[in-house]
Length: 282
Length: 269
Image (tube, rainbow over all chains, first blue to last red; front, side, top):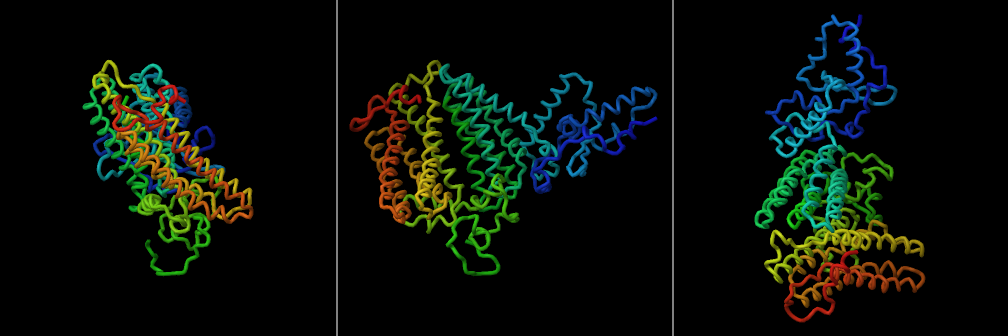
């Protein structure tokens, strides 16, 4: 009889258990910046923010064994992962560097709403980390698990909000130019930070700069209903300042030299300002 | 310019390309790029890092020195050439053209009819201008120098690198940024004067720095390229004026504009 603990300890043989390690990560792991929130419980959100690809098969194996032996108490390693954080382990298998993660959360036979809710919760957690970074952050785990769902969501929201208000002949153009500006802009800004010698993982940069668009969403929502320029302009400018501040906070950790930090920040100013301007004049 | 702890040393500036100067160039001593792993491939980000190895002060100096056009800009100030400045000068120009022309049009609309900008009847903005500006500026600022470099290379004039050409053209368009800001003022004669001034400044800057390269060609006919460049530059200036600086209030201040606002149909492409 194989107990669940044993199944987790078995040597890694099946390739379906692996996800390939992030290429960028092995550059300089410790230098990649991130944020932490002391008051925020790490337990459920960071545990689930990585995708369930690798977990599903493992949990399947565990479960099927458990169901074959219903008397076996399912109290093994599953729940006893310290802090519930994903235990990521790296090793080289057949010349390929792989990473395995154990989370102890069963994701196979849960309702779809739970899965979606968990993804939304992880987007929310990252949003808080990006827009309200705590001082002197120690743990950067939340932002290490980048995703592009959040940026995609904010990009679409901003495009829709702006195109709703535009006239019928221009709404399509507004939507497509907002989406094009956000996607190509964050791409260019990330590459720029890398070119200037910043130690930043490519997709992490994309993720963070995408999340930084969120305050502009709020400004766009407000200006959808309030058409007074005296209200719209200050709100949009404040949102712009917030975006830039959050993005600069992130760039601070990328070890760009002091004489060049303005060169890295300037594209951000430009990128977010053009979006803020589109909100003001919509 | 910081010197390393080893103090002064002789440097050769004959090879001004940033990639070639990895041994004793200006930038390698700043230590901005700590571990350059030899030659990296064309598709890597690291391949382009030498062209972005520049600090804020240098970029600003290269920008404002284009306002005082002098010969030998390439050898005096662009060694080694960077790509940060040209790219962001052009991108800033695109956005400032769009921002200031929409600002000017809203000012013009407000001056002509203050009641028009009510919540029920908002002012129309032309977002097509943004893509027009993108196409125009990138085609002129990136396409022309690359074509010129390729053409001169074909004719056997290879005195400069492609990065220097792009940098020269990119920095050369810097003057349009303050001009686009000043053209918000709805006075036709002032706008024409500003655009003409900017055309003369940047045109002179480009020609005076391209001429020595053209003059090294064996065939005298190559020098006629300079006329072609001037014509292209004049076309660019006219495009800027007509497309982006043509919004007026109903009551224009000063003499009448010979080329009035082309209207939404002409601006829509």
